[in-house]
Length: 82
Image 1 (tube, helix red, strand yellow):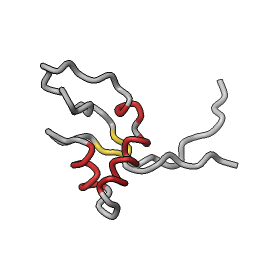
Image 2 (spheres, one colour):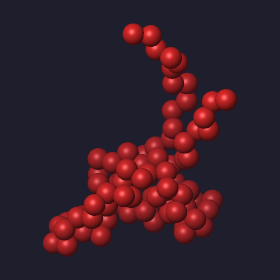
Image 3 (cartoon, helix red, strand yellow):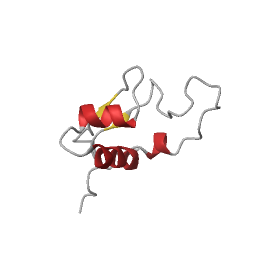
Image 4 (cartoon, one colour):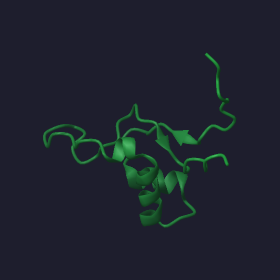
């Protein structure tokens, strides 16, 4: 099997710290933007987390879809190669 190409750039990501939510990650990783803008960017770059079904109301994760094992991208995906 031939490989079409290789990865040359790794997209910057973090693992959540205990108790992290969108706002805490945004303030730590995207401090140059307003909180609202940074949260919106994080959510759009991390649809695999943002669109996850909500946890049950009596769950420890209720109200926060971010799990400790999630990889959270803190930069947008690269533009497609021309």
